[in-house]
Length: 92
Image 1: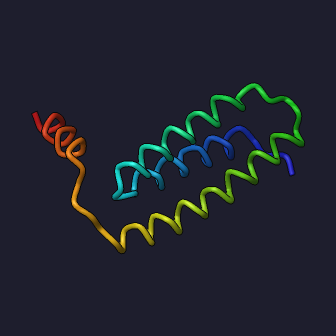
Image 2: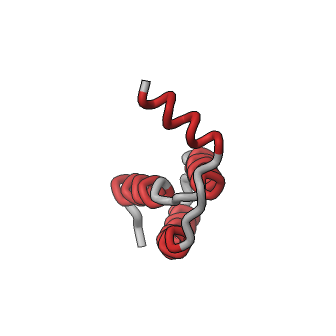
């Protein structure tokens, strides 16, 4: 299955969008760093088979993130101190 550039960019945007929904700061930031790192690391791949493999792995990861966000949001916790500092900085 040949994945177009637009499909891959759409996958990237969906992964980022879903990761931002996490209530937990640590999970959210880890997921965002990991997604960016993986896409940056694999941006120069030319082999279509490897591209398809990475794309399918990304789709599976997206489904995992969606499930984990739903489960994680069922059990809310107090915000970390770093989150309150960031929120105050964004308000000013």
